[in-house]
Figure 1 (tube, rainbow, N blue to C red):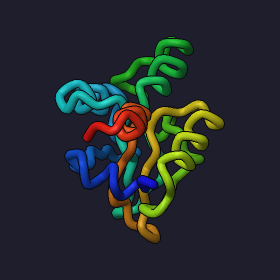
Figure 2: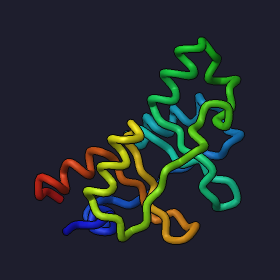
Figure 3: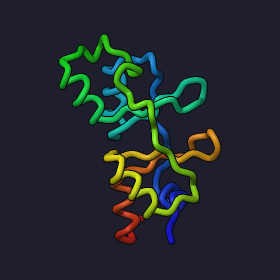
Length: 129
């Protein structure tokens, strides 16, 4: 049975982060440049939230906020669901489906070791790397 750590080993585990006081506009630029759908929000090397494309659409576009003036902390998801590297792929998928989110940080204690996307889960279930 595959686990979260297996997914992390098979992919580029470079983590893209943003600070809570960065502008949403800056975060969107990073997402675009790195071709990712979510950024980890870190403060003092600690995970305090996650910012996804969905957060942007629902909160910036939906509420007609200015992304240059809005801070990441104002729209990020702060109640982040995480898993350990030993969580099974099936457990990860169940959490994502139940919580209706597409990105799942992997933590070893309080240290972020990776980020799994729903795309990573599907690829692993299909036997790809």
